[in-house]
Image 1 (spheres, rainbow, N blue to C red):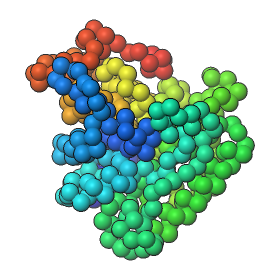
Image 2: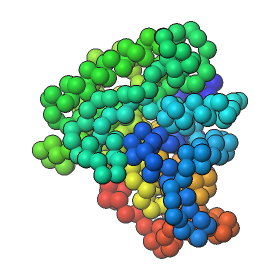
Image 3: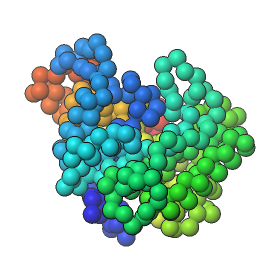
Length: 340
């Protein structure tokens, strides 16, 4: 069993403690922004002239897996293949997962306008290939890649678009059942104007999540959710409604270091049991130090502000110039975090 399996078992059994909080590194950006998602190749003084190459990006993934703090490493199917071939997950307690679909609202490519239109369902990963390397379903075959994927949906209060998304989600669940594949469910905030009052939108999202899962039996339900943090009230409402649904939050933009730690702290406080952070780790001056302090914040052994100061101390030890002065980096800048 991986750490993820052990933690989910305790959470579902009502035995959760803060050390069971699940942390995932979302390194699946090549399924969306593509080349730029690898992040800048920074010098210790913070300067950079290019983005990381694919091989350099894969090296950053291996380093995080070898650090053995995160519970899930989320990547694209093609990068999983490369990582498995190099033995990255051999004897590791870190669970590999793939982005199992890539809806049009994550196609944030340079010069493109796809993300400005209502989300359309699409997926390129082939589940049998990801799970065991074959082309036909064989749920009894040994898992050589992974049997866990992320499936995302974006509801836009658009009947035709949302029905298409739900039909594609149903087809995906059938594919999972045929392949012995598990998934976690990401639901984004609307990616276009909806006409919904901003104060109501977080509750619109909660209702959409629960409504689309109401007809789904236990065998086909997600392992957990991945949703935006829309403030304490909305998160607490969703997390307390049905304890069998494990709620996780996504990281969103890079923000300040305080934003990262504050989001983790508030998410746990208001009922989330999973955090899946991408840019907040990948764009950090020292991703490994960031992950280390994230774990401590989740465990409750250090407060967010104290963690920022300790992180800057670690950067100084490593001879790395921080992206922001400590006085700026210790500030909470995201409006939704100020609510909490």
